[in-house]
Length: 284
Image 1 (cartoon, rainbow, N blue to C red):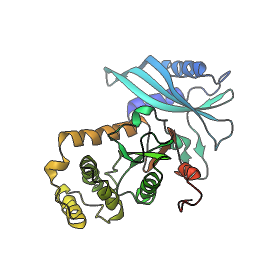
Image 2: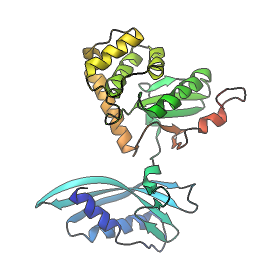
Image 3: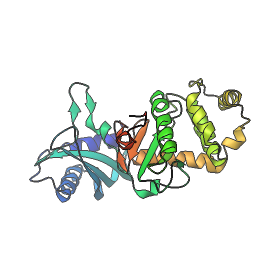
C-alpha cells in the first residue's frame, strides 16, 4: 500500500459516529477526517452514489469521490480517489468485514450504470429498444464467464423484445493472458458482423496461459477456421476500445468477471433476467 493510501485509511478511520447519516453529513465527516492529516488538503468531496445493502438490514453504502492535494516525499500532487463508507443510523464505518469469510463488504459494491452504456458499439444481441437492458463485463477465458455469458447470448437472441445485451471487455491478463488477444479478436469479429464466431470462442477450449499473441491467434485461427492477423486485431480503434472498456470497469469499481447489470443495477447473482423469461424457456 502506498503512503497516500495509508494516510487516507488512517484519516477515514478517525471517527465512527455521526448524528445522522445524511449525504451532507457524510461529506462533512470525510472532509473533517481527511483534514486532520497535515499532509492532505481537501479540494472536493462528493457522493457518487448511495446503495442499500439487502444482505445487511439497515446498512447503506456511500460511494465517495474525493480530490486532494497530497504531500509525499516533499512533493505536492493532486489526486482524485474513490472509496466506500458504510452507514447505519447514526453510525459510519470505513469498512465492514464478514467474520466467516474475512472478506470486505466493499468487494460487493459496484456502481450503477447510466444510459451511455447502451451504445451501438457494445450492443451484441436483442433489440436495442427491448424492455430490459443487460450489460456484461466479461473475460472470454474466465470459467464463470464461459458458463454465464452463453446463456445471456441465448436469452437475448431468443427473446429480442425482452432483452438487449451489451458486451464489454475485461480480460484478466494476470489469470488468463491469452484472453487479451482473444478480446481484441472479438472486437474485430463484431465489427465484421460475425457474432456467431464470438459465440464459438466461448465454446472452444484455448491455452489460457499462452502469452505469445501470435500463438494465441494461430490457435484461434486453426480451431475456428479463421485467418486473423496481429495487424487486424491491433488496429488503433480496436486497442482503444479495449482500453476504454477496461477503464470503464475500473470507474464502476468492478473487481471480477463476469459482472452483470440488469436495467442499470449490479446483479450480483447474475440471475435477475431469468425471472422475466417466458415460463416455457429452458433457462429457468
